[in-house]
Image 1 (cartoon, rainbow, N blue to C red):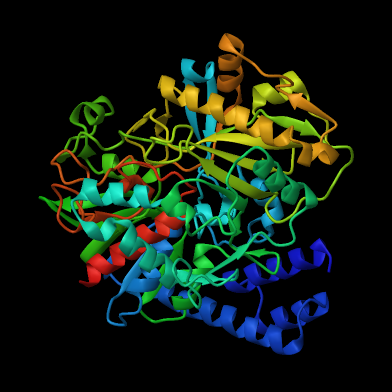
Image 2: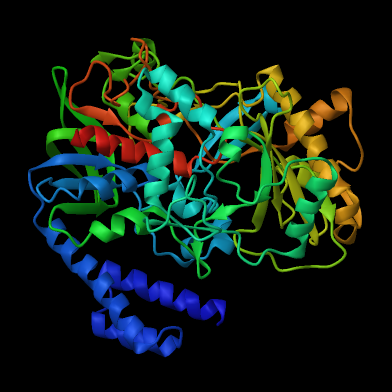
Length: 572
C-alpha cells in the first residue's frame, strides 16, 4: 500500500466530515483506493457521516447558552469532553480555533514535523535571549482538533510518581497524586504490549503500543545503553515511573501506521451525540465577567464576533500560551502587565503568565551512518530518562534517538551533517529556568510575547552537559559501530566555554509549554486544587498551564490526566 493511497483516503475522510462530498461519493472514491473492503468503508462512512450530519445540525441551531463551554480541543479538552458527554443532560459547547484534524500530515506519524509552522500551528516564538546566544526559538503548539496530540510526536510517556506526588503536595489534594493518576491512566489505556496489570490498562480509549518494527539502529542503541551501564527496561511506562531511571522503546499512539490522537480517542466517539457541539474556526477573544462570575465567552467565527453564555462552567483548555492570553484579555492577570496594554484589571492574579516552563531538546549530537535508511514510526523510537545525581527526586535529563539529522539552526549550519546522519539528542526534563507570557496588545489577533528564558539557570546548563556526554557514550559504544562512520557533532569531548557555547547553540524545545497558570493551595496560585480560577466563579482551567512544575516526560498523557480530573471534579 503506497503512501499516496493512504493520503487519498485521508483527504476523502476530511471532505466527508467537512461536508464537501456526499456519503455515496465518499464510498465510491474510498473503494477506488483499494485500501479498505466494502464492509469496512461502509462502516467508516456511517461513522463520519453521522458525525458530520450531527455537527451540521448542532451548528445550524446554536443555543444562546450551554451548561459547559470548553475552550480548546487539545489533549486535555478532548479527555474532558469525552467524560462530560457521558451525562446526556449536560449541554456542551467546544470552541476550537483551528480546523479538523484530518490532514494527511496529521494522520501519518512519519511526517508529523511537516505540520510545524503551518496553519495547524499557532506559530509562537520565544524571543531571543542571551542564555541561548540570542536565538529566537520556536514554540510550536497545536491549532487544530486534537491540539498537540495532532501535530507533535506520538510519544505516550506517563509522569513519574514524584511528578504527580509533587502536584498533590502543591495542591493540598491527594487525588492529584500518583496513586489516583495510575488508576486514571490504566482506565484510559488500550495497551498493546506485554500484559502488566499493576501498571498497564487494556480496553480503554487510548491506543498505545511499543514502537512497532524498530530499525536495527534503534535496537542497537539499547545495546549501547546496556554497554555503558544505563538501565534498560521492557516498558518505558511502568516501573520507571517509580524508580526514576530507564531506557527503552517508546510507547506510541500509532495504530496500523496511523496516528491515534486524543480527538480520536475521546472526542470523536461523542460527536454524534445531541449534547455535544464542536465549532472549529472559533477563536475565543475573551471571557465575559459579571462581577466575579464568568458568564460567557466572545469568539470570532468567519470574521464575525459571537457571544455565547455558560449556565454552569467555562473551562479553558487552550494550551500553554493561549490560556494565559485569554485570561489577560479578559482583565484577569497582573495589574501592571494589563495596564501596559490598556486593559482594566477586573481580577488581580499576578501569577498569570509567570512560571512558564518547557523541556529542552538539544539538537547537536549527530552521527553519520554508512548508508541511508528509511525511518520508522515517528522517526524516534528509543528514549530514556536518567538522574545525573542519585540524590535527585526526579530524572533531570533524557536522551532521544532521532532517525534524521536533527539539529538546531546554528548547529546545522556549523557542522553541515550529511543526509545519512542521525541524532542522539540530549534533553533537559526538569528545568529550573522559568519564563513569562505577556500580551503584546489588547488585540486578540496579536500573538502574546513569549519569553522562555531557556537555560538562564546555571543548573540547566550543567545537566545538559551531562546528558550530552551520555548521548555520546551510547553512540560511540561498540554496540553502535555498524551505524557510525564518524561523530559529526560535536566530534569530540568539549569542555569549558566551548562546551557551554555548544549547549546554548543547540538548544531547541520539545514544544511542551506548561505552568503559566499554576495550581496551588496558596492565595497567589492562579487555580486551586479544583482548577477554579481564584477570584472568579464558574471559570476553570484544565490544560498544561496548571502544572506547578512541568512533568519530566512529554506532556500529552499528563494533559489527559488533567482533563479526566477536571471531569471528575465537575461531576462530583
